[in-house]
Length: 117
Image (cartoon, rainbow, N blue to C red; front, top):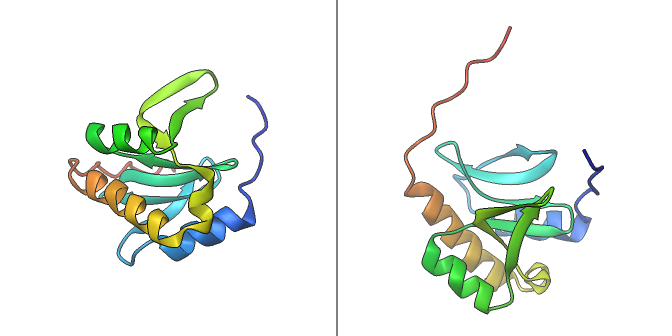
């Protein structure tokens, strides 16, 4: 597996500042991420912010400069990489994080996995 770069502090700070209260914050592949009812809404991955959006919002963000999220050669269809300038545009970042959180909220809750022991 390729070694992934840590997310830049600028992205981590912008992401943390834009997340609303009530969203579960945890790590996904070692990166900060936001979850609702066990469903990932958004997260950082290397130099990118990744948002899980519905089809309409995904299309809109792609037209606004987003790009497909590709991991190890595989396109993750439900996700879009946000434009890099979102880290300097808090209102835009909050708006799109809100859309991702709304999308995650609309999904059935994921069952919690039992811890191995």
